[in-house]
Image (cartoon, rainbow, N blue to C red; front, side, top):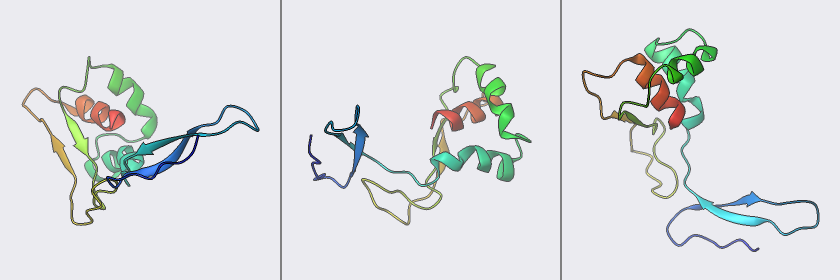
Length: 109
């Protein structure tokens, strides 16, 4: 395959390459700066967990994320929007949600 540049602001990346000498398959992706740090943020800023190792048990103790979703745009939105002024949010909260839903939503982001 060959890399195809995005016409909509997405990032071109290698999706996979099966073995040496084979051609890579390229993909287009959106980028979020803090998605990988969200559990650390839940720990350090919200105090909902003491250690990241607690998250699996918490997340599997609920059936789903309780319709809770994160947009972890703590440093803005990257591809395809490229908005440094965007801010993060947690959407869908109801009185039903508990910390286990927050942790599961963070993992699923």
